[in-house]
Amino acid sequence: MKVKTSPRHRKCRFPSCKNILSIYNHEIYCHAHLKAICWGTNTDFTHAEKTVKKAS
Ligand SMILES: [Zn+2]
Image 1 (tube, rainbow, N blue to C red):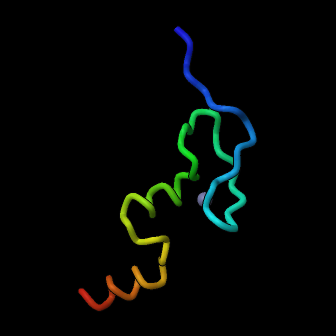
Image 2: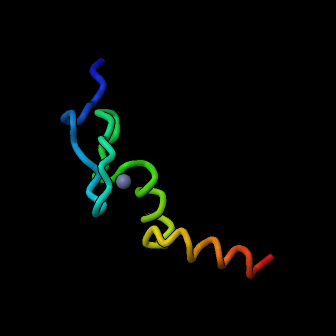
């Protein structure tokens, strides 16, 4: 059974991100940005941090 792989040396589509995607990652973003996009935070980690601090 063949494992589906993606072309090598694809770069994360996130602006200014230079992460190279794994051939096993079939998404267009690296894992870090994929997570951020799933959360809908727009990778505004600074803002996310502030929100967490405020909440606690
Ligand atoms: Zn990225």
